[in-house]
Image (cartoon, rainbow, N blue to C red; front, side):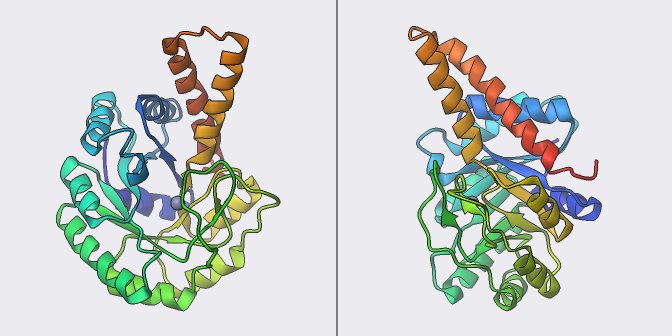
Amino acid sequence: MITNLKVLLTHAKEHKYAVGAFNVYNYETIKAVILAVKEKQQPAIIAFGEKYLANMELKEVVNLVRTMTTDLRTNIAIHLDHTKSIDVIREAINAGFTSVMYDGSELDYEENVKNTKFVVEMAHQAGVSVEAELGSLQLGTDTNEDDAEEIYTDPIQAKDFVERTGVDCLAVSIGTVHGLYKGEPKVSVERLIEIKEQIDIPFVLHGGSGTPLHIIERCIDNGITKINVNTEISYSVVQMISKLVQDKPNSHFSQLSVAAVDTAKNTVIKYMEMFQPNK
Ligand SMILES: [Zn+2]
């Protein structure tokens, strides 16, 4: 069933697990996430960012997901990841996305509050959930996200932000990176605990790729209910394809496509299993 983020994350928060938000950009990645959901019978979030509008149109994402999930009983959400444009958010809501992330992290604080509040009012009227972000994540390797200064989320500001905007969940910056880690991950669970002492809503961890299981478990214990995975899905597929093409330079594209679905599915399942540490 296709539902919104609030439904998914409320259940996850109650039962102490995290729902994986897996980035998709084409047929292969969408198929991979849906096959993983069917195999594991665990909820997941199909995430598509405005960065990938060159790959697919919003309506195409929704229609493809709907076509592939007519018999699906497990809950999923169709989520618009990292989007700075309010027009794109409006378009996604009209196209049938059930959840959106407004990324005003580059704006000054008051402007971020004002725009996020506007997005929340627009989205909630359509039954669509809203994620926002405070602070910003550093860049690791192999990522497709924008470079940013690492700014940890301020707990007091987070409380003010949530109260004034009415967002359904908040992405926090506590040391994970967009991309693969350059060295040892330095994630501050202590900062997460300080934020949790101020506000009691579902928290989102961006930069799941490569984050060790013991850190993920501590994050889930302290309120993280959604974990984004992008880089490793792409990385695993590109590695596999480059090896296949090296071994067999005249590979047919159709064979590469089938192999890509399988590899992406295995990466998604690996993270799904990490996000359900108590099961
Ligand atoms: Zn992110």
